[in-house]
Structures are given as structure tokens and as C-alpha cells.
Length: 373
Image (cartoon, rainbow, N blue to C red):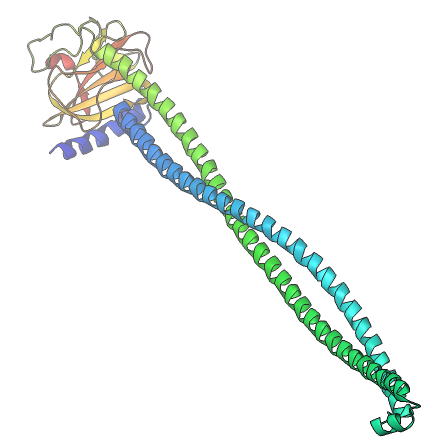
């Protein structure tokens, strides 16, 4: 039944509004609804802040862990650099020694070759020849010692060549191992350091991005909280006005109670060449306005020349409307009881002073409220 009444009210009020030069009804949200939306938004932003803060904290923990690992790697790198210096010194010494050994081997081979040529050219005398050609026992001994020394010298030359060749081979093998170790150590250290640095840079970038998002969300939350605080202050002022002493409920001979205690200033009827669709009751700004009867709020918003405007459907096509309010204390769809405070007197819209413009409408058409008060 009530949705049908609301539909009738809109269908009838729309042409009336056009006739009166007023804009169509804007079903704006009540202050309480907007406050709830702001509170929900603040909570969502706080939740998002919490998530971002945890993400940043986890990233910071990982970065700190990587920093410790990087410090260990830097220490390891420093040790390996020291080791590399020793290896490089050893390499230089080994290369120099290898060069010397190779030169000595060349010389030894030259000496050996010459000796072999001399032996071949001179021929080696046998023992019988040495004995027969000796001039005595002493000469024999001298010749024998001479032969032994020659043999010893040849043997030393050959042994020296063998040793130089073996040392050269050993030095070359050691040099190859040192060069290989140098390359492996350098590659391993650089790889680990680059890996840690890369991960650390990625994490730092992600953390910076999340921190920027957090700053944006936090700024948004602060702005929303400021808006919420302003709304709550406004609501507190409204409640203060509404909770002010509204005075006793005034009853007349009709089914409705008087919507406000004040001075009757203007009746229903033609005024300045067109219909004055209600009655005016003057009172100070902030004076409480009551629902003339129980019902459901159908309009609660700014409505052109009416300023802050509220309409309540009471069933059977009957509705009451309240204009020029300084503040609206109800929202669309809210059920109200007779005599309940629904707003406060003001001078919003086309108004020459603080008063309540009160209307009674039957199926959207205005009738004289005095027949119901």
C-alpha cells in the first residue's frame, strides 16, 4: 500500500513542482546515512592500511635478512679477495719460476746435446785402453779418476735435465690449477653478490611502492575522518537542536497534532497570485518540529524553494509535508510516530524568516491543513 502511495505522491507532486517553478525531488541521502558511509569507508581504509603495513613490515624483515646475508657475503668476498691476492702473488711467482725452469731446461738440454756430440766425436775409451796406455799405477789412478768424473758429470747433466723437466711440468700444472681456482672464486663471489643485490633492489622497490600506496591511503583516511568529524559535529548540532525543549504536544480538534509550537502567520489559499499550499507557523530557528501523525518518511532532502523538505505518508493517500527546516532529523523509509521530533525550524529555501511551512496532501494534491489540526 505504501509504495503505491509514494508513487501517487511523486506523480502528483511532479506536475505541481513544475507549475510552482520548483525542481523535481532529489532523493538525497540523510546525514546519518552519509555518516555511516563515511564510517564504513574509514574502516575499509584502516583495514587496507593494516594490510599494507604488514606487507611493508614483511618486506622490511626480508630486506634486513638480505642485508645480513649481504654483509656475510661482503665479508666472504673480502676474504676471497685476500685469497685472490695471495693466489695472484703465487701465480706471479709460479709463472716467474716456470719461466726460469723452462730457460734452465733449455740450457740443460743444450749442454746435454753438446756433451752427447763430444762423446760421439771423441769416442769413449774402454778400461783396457786406459790400463795399457798408463805409464804407471799413479797414472792409471789419475786416468781412472778422470773417467769417473766424466761419467759423474754426464750423469749430473742428465739428472739435472730430468729434474728441470719434472719441475717445469709440476709448475705448469700448479699454474693451471691456480688460474682455474681464481676464475671459479671470482665468478662465485660476483654471482652471489649480484643475486643478493638484485633481490634487495626488487624488495626495496616493492616496499617503496607499498609505502607510497600506504601514504595515499592514510591521507585518504585522514581526509575521510575529517569529513566524518564535520558530519558528526553537524549531527551533534542537529541533535542538540532537536533535543531542545520542544514544548508540549499541541492538539486541536482534528486527527493531527500541531507540527510545531509557534505563531500562526499565514493561512492556506491564494497568495500573490498563486496557491499557498500550506500554512506558516513562525518560531525561532531550532524549534522542534513534530510529525503530525504516525507514518513513513517519503521525502527527506533539499527541495528547491522549500529548502530542507520532509514528507510523511500516513496511509489512505494522506501525507504531510514540512518545509524550510534548518535541519532534517529523519531519513527516507523511516517509520515515525505521532509527535516524534523530525526536524527543526529554519529559513532555508525561499523564506523571509524562520518558520515552518506545513502542508497536508491527499493523493499528492494540497488541501487546507486546518481541517486536520
